Length: 415
Image (tube, rainbow, N blue to C red):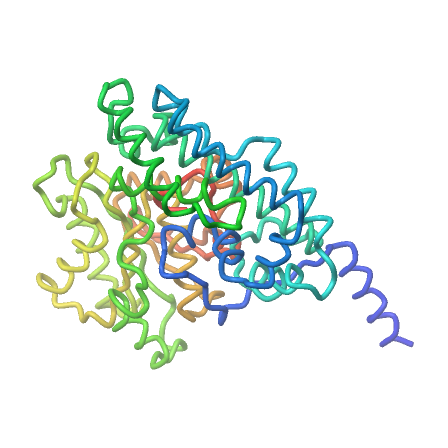
């Protein structure tokens, strides 16, 4: 009787939680040889790779018509549009387009079919849309579609139309959209995009290729830099993970957030060096088997130097830390994403997720992290960590949280 009651309660909880399922740490992300695309628009990347889903879309009259309409709009824009914003507007996904696709996905989704398998074999175990985990599979699919569509439009608006990004000082468009030559650039973009997608049968590809093209011409393909890290920049440390006796360490790793220099000619700021030196002290005391250095090519605007890469070089050359003890996160652009990306790295690389991490930084950033939850909620829609003890003015414990796997739809340089 007790076993029956436990089973009954478990069933009720499962129903009340929708189809919640935890991400799989062994799941391998599908990249289609385009990390910028897959990290920003993961559902669309999966849809491109699935021939059975493509057949569903091709055979659906409404989606087939939408594809044709988007191609016609792109073609006619080359004749009818006389300003750059007109050209880019014809490539975006309109509200009515997004709503139509949501409706058709709901109608096409059947238990056991290609869309159902895509959700259960990829979307759910990937964790990339984990904020929707309590929804039914078809609801999660629709939410993922709507998120990717909004992300594409956001990219087009920032990097073709000049809309201010979340952090204008470091992430803005590279061009003056009021310059007369800008129309020619946008016209040429539309010409190339049309050549790329003119034979497509997928309704989203014109908009997707537009977003990717605008990121490319702005030299804003940061999300794909250094990938795949586990087999390139992080391979030595990644291979070392399986050899670690975790019981010997209080912490899984030491996280060092980057600090950008003030000019375009300095590779590593003095503050970055000092944070690394503090981390070296803790590493040599045996606090953790790894150091994670985190920071992208951020400050100043359009710098070619990457904070994490330069910190790794400094740790190896100046402090003789072995390469197999250093992970880089070369993508984070803010303190919020230092911690978020760190949690992703820990999860995907098989580092014990329940073991606390150890942040080493300057006093002022440590103070900021202690009070950063509200900003995380505002910018990420969740908090990617749980704080532990504050060890000193420059050191604090934290625990990574699984919500960190969620793609950020309005930060195309580090989604």
